[in-house]
Amino acid sequence: MSHFKSTIWHRELLRSLRNKYVATPLYNTNYEGDISSHGQTVKIHRPGSITVSDYVVGTDMAVQKNPTGTDLELTIDQQKSFNFTIDDILQKQSAVDLINGYSDEAAYALRDAAEKHILSTIAAGADSDNVVTVDAGLSTSDIYDNIAKLKKILSKNNVPLEGRSIMLTPDEIELLETCDEFKSASDLGDDTKRNGFSGRICGFDVFETLNLKEDDPATVATGDPVHRYIVASYQGATTHAEQLVKVKQYEAEKQFAMGVKGLHVYGTKVIRPTGIAVLKVKYTVGTM
Image 1 (cartoon, rainbow, N blue to C red):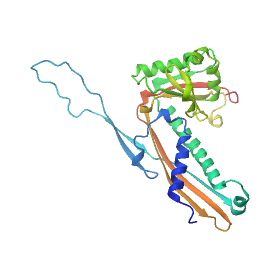
Image 2: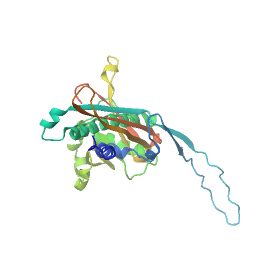
Image 3: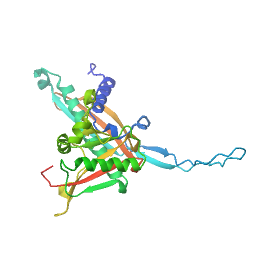
Image 4: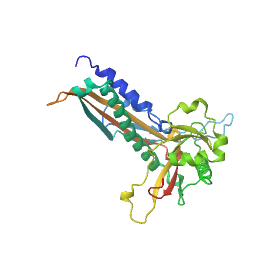
């Protein structure tokens, strides 16, 4: 196995994983360099408010000593792995490199698992006053108005206008694309090259994903509503840290086959709950 360079393989797989994320506009990775394994905790200090007072010439200024902040912890509490083998005969009979092909598929699978966790954490971490419940579901006639409510919530919480994003499933994208407000507001241009980018509405970059948090129908009591949680935010509200800590190629025991296994660890923390707004949309199972 002298031809296999583990460091190069590691970097290629990690880059493939990151390039396929859609939800990146909703979080930052400011603390990612501080982690190396599952179970680690990163301390985060969020500064408190600074008092502003009138200045009077010749008068001593009041001093705000040791402003009170908030200490938060980002815990790397998630770990996912993959492990597959390719028979030597199948590899020799194939016209393509099966090992690299399936490694790319592993990257997709890791992305989906991590992104579901990220979007679920963001939806659950929003301030309770920032959740708008839509009991009748969404339609072409009201989807714009409901997204406008999210814009108002974020603006009243002093969330920066720049860099706001919203994540929608293909069902909501379809509704938007028949909405006159969306057609007139969207200027796609070169930005369509960004993963999942679908345009702009109400000051939000619109991204398409299948990984929004939804109630699991199997866990919902008979007669209770099932919901999808559409999230709108900016990168300063949530932080995420991840590492692909181990990737190894090996010869399968008791087989003439080569295997590849890897371990992906990560954690997500909402640090500004008021910077997230959520549409909690009721839907009928099987229709959305």
